[in-house]
Image 1: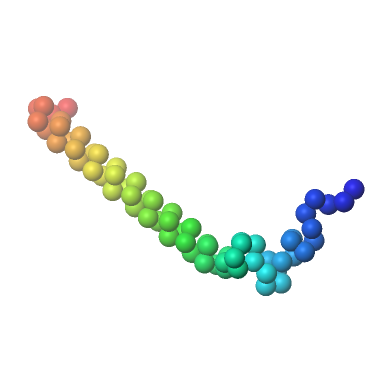
Image 2: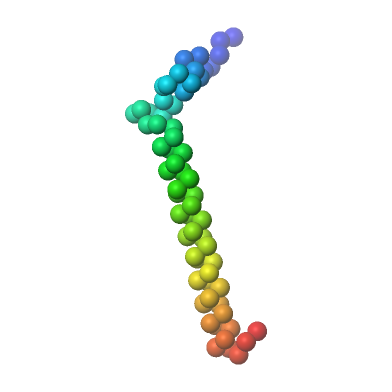
Length: 65
């Protein structure tokens, strides 16, 4: 049986070719992914702080606990 993936496609990233269409550099894609993960993590962190803060305000108005 013949392999489903061509040898040229498997070797291209190691000889200077690009896996991504349009000649996009894999390093640039990696940097963008890391930055997006950091921004998403900060969003979740701030969201959690604000939700806890508003819950504390509600409990304070109701008399605690």
